[in-house]
Amino acid sequence: MFQIKEQPQLYQRVPGTESPSGRSASSPSRSSSSDSTERTCRKFGLLFCIAASVVGVGTLGRHLRPALDDPGTLPFIALHSPWDDPDQDAPWPRIAWLMSFPNSGTSFTMRMVGRVTGLTAATNYGKECVEKSGNNIPLFEDSPGGPFILSPDDREVPDRYVMTKTHCGGRCQSCGPSKYIETPESFLDACLTGGHYTSKITAEGTKKQGEFVNSKYDKKLVQRAIHLIRDPFDNLVSRFHLEQHEKKKQNRTSWLESYPNTAEGFQTWCGSLDAHSLKDETKTDLLDKKVKSLFKKVPCHGDFYRYTQWHNLALKVVHDLDLPTLVVHYENYERNYEGAVNSILDFLQIGRKNALPEFIAGKRYKNIYFTDEQRLAALELIRYLADEETWSLLERYDDSLAEASG
Image (cartoon, rainbow, N blue to C red; front, side, top):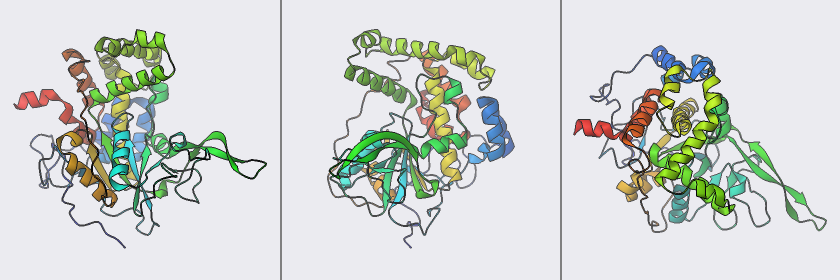
């Protein structure tokens, strides 16, 4: 059976987490499991507390593999990840999730891997991968519920790991906490869920696209994961830009006039989203008083909550499924594009055939679309909501820490 090399050269330790000696100079000592679980309950309210007390969310704080280079430029693999897949006897090819909160750089990552390898990927979402006949092709014949081959007509499936897109759950944009707060179980269920077109046979005996139905596949099919992370401020503004793109396609001129592609337009859009969920947030017992207080200072506060919850639960899911997991920060592409791509291909055990497509770094919106006060309040909200391991992955986006250390 193929084994991952003992110490992949490109995998690193995230800054600010424990060193092999057990303590980090920049981090407090680890809380006990009960303390961490209590903190999770306090943040996320009664529903999550019940789930946390059962599954032990607080056990996520783990060491990460020792750093071999500048830890800010390359992906790394967490120590809680085993070297081996949970089912070492699973047939090939195997699923390697690309887990991402929407607009984290998912599309670029999928396109980039496809171009440099000449191979296809897969997705949970059948509307993204319709073949010429109008149907979806499952990656596995015995799993009609997905995932589905992304480019079934013109690219081959990898022999080893097939990168498979999933956005999991808790990501609705205009909903309130009664809709977006997830338990680990519901989040995992969403990670495995998508949809596909059914097939109809015409009178001539050919296949024709039928109705679109929701579908789900077995968690045992998943053997690895890539956890993609982006600066929360850029991530949220990118979601606003996607909304603009969709409204342009729909010719929604009134909406576009109300929410132009400016800092002011973004702030107005956030105000609309915040007002829409205000009643649900005020009445719910799923949020504690501290969260509700912090919400008042943060535009698009629901999306900052969803973002942080998403990364908390993504770490929980890969830990529970015992998946080898590569953590990729979107900014790795800007800082060390070649190294980041090589890390991903190494993790997927896919050879490189073609030249890298150009990577054009986008704008940074943290200081453009948010005031200083809003930025600091948003970071305070994220720190309060984030589990310890989650914050170790996100603290690089807190400029106040860099300013204090400088």
